[in-house]
Length: 346
Image 1 (tube, rainbow, N blue to C red):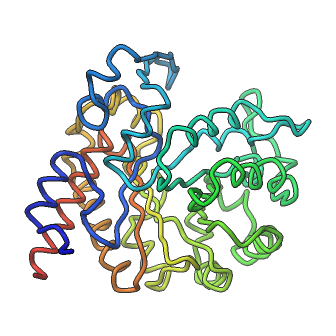
Image 2 (cartoon, helix red, strand yellow):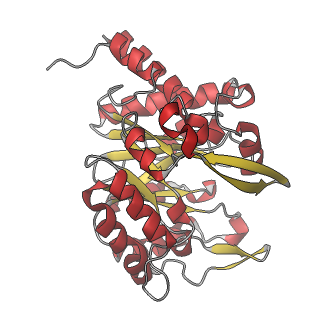
């Protein structure tokens, strides 16, 4: 069976179907239930009467978010190959009494409606990977930091029970830390090694450290030794993806041959500002998408895709509305840039 032509893949991408753009790239998004994606990802006639709303306060402003029901995940996977679930970042699946919590039931609902070949990346609860947590307006030490047994019991094992082999990986995201508030790069590696050494070998773990001073050579050496993935994150205070690639020693370190890039916010723009600029997430927003930085982000992601191909790896592109205004359109821009390069190579 012949693979689709570049022209056919372009036409599919214009219809927001990214499943055949490149054999070494899987397109997805960070979260999925956005009402602003009606007519792009979700059939308008199917869901227009099923929209729910919720209010959210951000940077002193109030916003209304429109959401499609969880059952829409079946339509999501007619366009994308992977979905990052991020609500698990905020609490584990089991409560302190080992009873299923609200996130357990929501994730089970996803599992019920997702196709058998769906692929999920789950964010690990910050409870186990944040050095400090915000409580009552101030940051306090996290007493559950790197508690491996608690992580396994309240998140890892129930996640596998719910998703089975549809759970492709877990992303550990750690908050930004000032140099004065964090360990040395070597001490950081030692602490993380004790934690990850106590965890099961599957599924694949990917780590996103948001502190540039910790992304040193020994850290990437450790990732390679452990078979852990570095998340190439386009985020407020991290260096550009191309610089992270150089810092990694031009290597991909995940044992299962997958790599994750998360396209989250413009660099030097805080979450609240990016959110307010992108809302209601229906279309690209020129202040986000028509900048040199956005252009470089697309080029860097494309370069990472071909580096994944060269190392026989698979790149998971996780797009966020806040980076562009509309995540499906960001994926479309990247898909066309990848296909431009494919055309040149042909």
